[in-house]
View 1 (cartoon, rainbow, N blue to C red):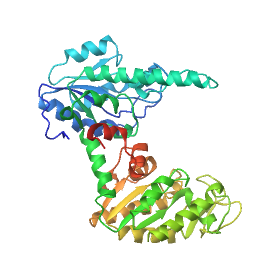
View 2: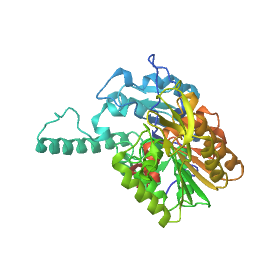
View 3: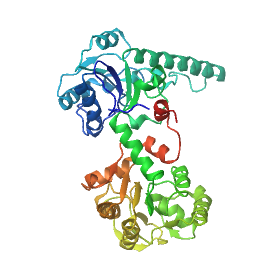
Length: 420
């Protein structure tokens, strides 16, 4: 497989799929340019080699062409970070895109308009009635798949080399993230630096693990983390359960959880995961105390109680101090750490303590030589909020893609380049 470090882009026209799906305010100002900055090393490498750039991305979830989701809004910031004026094509498939791509010279860059303005990018038909007959739905899907292939073929025709640097969309088999790779030979399709770093980080955690390996899994629902937890139970030494799903496990074990969030239909599942942990000699770590509130509010009355003795009318919104110590002891003794999901409602200032304690324990372990991977939107938001992102080994830019990768799934965007 070709690598970006070894590839010389001199005289090459590179189609680079990035993930510039950045948040914008009501005046279309970028409120967080992390994803743009993350791709700049790849883009600069191509330019410095003497290549030219065709930059492609999606923004938001548009249903057709709409100014709100135009990539024009981020053109200025891309130009600023690259240090050159970036051209813009008002369409990703129209005559302007074809002509401007063809006219690119070495050291020049072009940004195409939002790929998802076309339904063909995702390969999903739009505008079908909810009660459309099955035959009509099937025909529409078949037609859109054909359109998707045509879109990929045209995008590929703009360039001599394809670079995928969009890990955040690697779990989607879209025209520009997977299918386009079919139109380039093995020597002319490769990962960008960001994509390669993401793959390396996950594979270091899951395949080249240094033990003890601890995973901290947060989030409100067990149901959304079943596949991840089951995959991890064959790999980790310690599995810390945190966040709202704590209370499903606690209730399954006969504890009282008051008004805490719970999935009553997943109690048996929680018990089966506890059994699997024992069968695999995994230390399953649950909260022993909780910081509870009489209302879902930052200003609610609070108290610390045993995690399995939460009174009616109260709900757990974070872990308590004894649990903070318990989690920290496990984390600090680890050599590989994966953190996905906060310990509580960290958006409320009065309930950030548990997540911050976990974050600081990971910092300490990392300082002592552990490899720490932080992934999943809320975990990333946590380390950014606490100012400790730079003290972690790797902070992932992927949300759904990272979670599916950890689950053990083959991601289309990765398979399209390396074949597996």
